[in-house]
Image 1 (cartoon, rainbow, N blue to C red):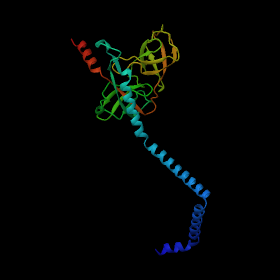
Image 2: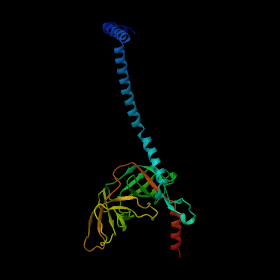
Image 3: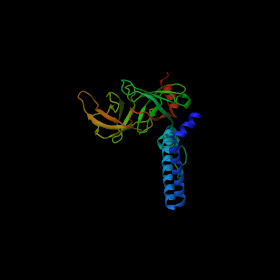
Image 4: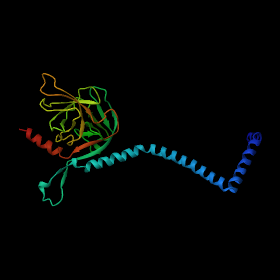
Length: 276
């Protein structure tokens, strides 16, 4: 306490100056309308700047919640999109209406780990069987296909990335309708190959490649990529087509796991056909 009094005694002149300056400022602003208005405007500007800083910090800290909410909204939109339904008008009498049967549902998930520089690349999602995710389900991103679910636990899922030669999905040229297989053999995370397109098909650089659909993995017409180069190597019956993938697989973010609602029925029928 004695040290505090000694400190105040040493700075008594400074404290007296500050007190007199405050009193003079109060008298000036209270007796002069112009100065009062200037003081109010200055204080409002300072307060507005501080509130704006606080808003920026709050918005940044809430980005995760905002992204999760947007991902859920996008999944709900995909569940209502016409690509998730098939017409069933042949089963009903239709009067100025369109009846559809839902074929797919979508589960939003976030990429928590991914590789893109290895010979066989995998992705880990933060949702698993408790969210309804199972093996052989397709995974798509905001711009295109990502991979196929390989294994799941209660809260996580392992996905075979498109950047893996083990994934060979049926794709189709939008312009011509011819189909082939997507195969990653370029060792480039931005590109992949499309094989089994006959040489008589006129493929041009810039053609769009989409999913074929009907394989129980991806819906029809999901973007896959754009043709980057076309060659006709001798000794091969098909063309050597390289495409630029639509989805950037070197970044992490939210994806959507595709649940084919007819997969169980299709698998049961196929097993019955194979049984003696």
